[in-house]
Image (cartoon, rainbow over all chains, first blue to last red; front, side, top):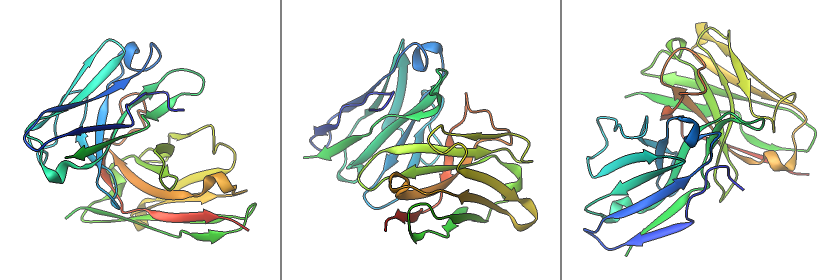
Length: 112
Length: 124
């Protein structure tokens, strides 16, 4: 069971907008720690998509955006494309005894 | 092109040891904190360990503390993960990943470059 909770799956049709949630607690996201998002295409290594809640590396299209509020964060993907079909993970820091760097359980995005 | 390349994975019996290596191309590892992140087949990501640029700061996940040791040799532009007393639950792809700065600031760290991973299978 991950400390950060993500929906196991989401789906959307090409061109649509989808969001993926990442729910934490007062010892991680709610404590003010930043959230990152990674995209993992099938059979490949993860790739940084969003850092510090809402910043994109220069190589990431602006169709991807991140936000954070309270104890949760969200990744939004607009203009969905077939190539976006992948697993998405959120990541943050947890200050509890079992803490340090933590990841969400991952969300499988299916493009219909 | 910046690349991280892991090596050293393989099949090992429970209780035995294995050493993973992470080398860089197009990048001087010396300037960055480096981490190991693992992923059991079909499962999610788990941070394992991290080391600052000068080896002055090191951190481990509770699941590997006392069994795994991270180190680096800046002269060889490489980072290592010595894994002892391996268990079946250590079976995973192990990725080395670059932190965004020199220091091991786990509260603000993220991983902007990843290797392709090396598979460790612990089984008798």
